[in-house]
Image 1 (cartoon, rainbow, N blue to C red):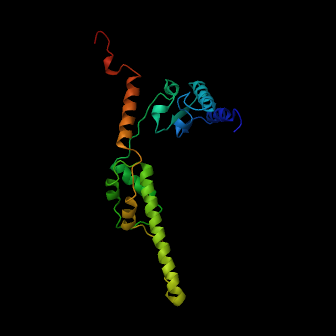
Image 2 (image 1 turned 180 degrees about the vertical axis):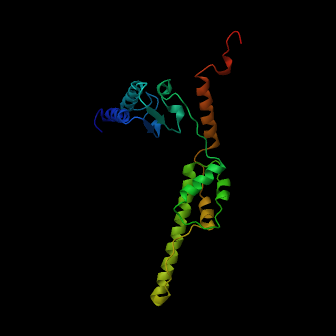
Image 3 (image 1 turned 45 degrees about the vertical axis):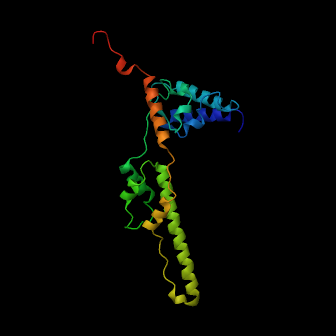
Length: 222
């Protein structure tokens, strides 16, 4: 990448956002460009962050451009980015509850043929503490098992068909069964530990306390 190209890209993104207002700029994996300055070898990343701060400060109040960032490492985000007028609203999104996990399973499997014997509620109940990505991995693994089983059955039918071509059965779409999910759950794992969750909660509480007086502030006559 040429010198200064990253900073130019940041400017271009904000220029386009201003021209397209109302607009929402969403930065996924924000920590990849907004880590605390001085913690990276070289200064290319620092220049990108400085440009990002400059662009955010240059936003006029009448511009309907909203900047949102997502990260699972809020503890390493440069504090300058969290100051008022920049990314000053912290929204902690917890892991999905059981009802949300049901919807995630349904979304992941909406285009896949699933056996009526598969109880999504049971899957959701046994995946407490799983993230959306963790649940997606379970569904993908179960789907792979179904496809693998279907291929093996096809090979068997082909072998039998060589001896009796009229006996080849019509191919059917592989259906994901309870057995496939049971096998997939053997390898299921949480990507977010209880320790990580406590760390996120502690960071959120610390940041909120550092931004105001909270209940400790009162007028003298109250």
